[in-house]
Length: 314
Ligand code: PMP
Image (tube, rainbow, N blue to C red; front, side, top):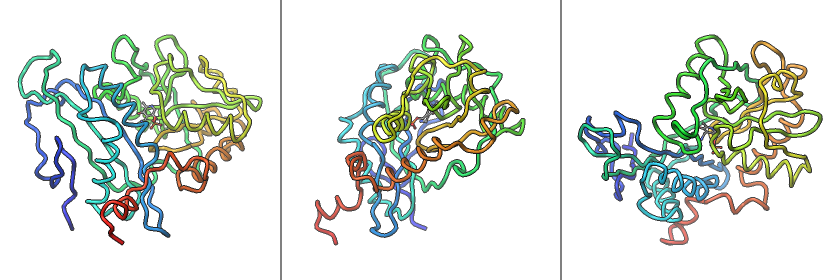
């Protein structure tokens, strides 16, 4: 098998050559920010489309500021590096792209050091959750981090200890996923997904001050709900018990896409089956990311056609 190629500090190199010292600051203190971007492979044309990569790198540029870091170049140039990476790896299946910017000083001491490293890697990636089956979720006993401790708004490496504890607890107790409450007791999000519920035909989601990531899938779905489905969308605090009486609940994210939740804390959501609005949003999202909705094609970045443009390769 060919060695995967990664982008590391400005060069494309074999994965095995990309090494960091054991004393790396981010390994000890979690001082990095990362992203997760999906690439959807289209079997008929052989094309690979990255979904909203520019928005992911724009978010990353903002998150980097939280840790006094900066992306090595503009978000647009980061998108170009990513499409180049996909071409160099000749992927012919769906992929998950993981850019990471981290504090790379190899010395002891917690203060944020100057040295930074930046990498992008991509791995083949199928479904993260089975979107046809409903998820059984629990309210985790762990509370969501607060903006004044480790901000959830940024995809900060160290913050994912909070997610890992919750997700592990849920799976160990026989649930599919965890749902966080924040310190104020309001619903926040899943371990790596934003959350929506439907009541009386309205779509409701915790607002951005509830300790959530400003999700790109969340933003995409709010747009679809308002513009394509004509639904009212409320961004506001949500109580735990509102989940118990909701008609529909679903989680969403780059990896999870649109994942219906049919049970919360051993209480059936609605009639215990994925709801109609959830399924409709799921269908439209699926069409959108697979390049079948002309109106949203600007969100899809082709990786292989660009090579034809640049290098004349058929
Ligand atoms: N919340 C958390 C904590 C996440 O890690 C993710 C995944 N990036 C999301 C929400 C969903 O965000 P997005 O739709 O941008 O992938």
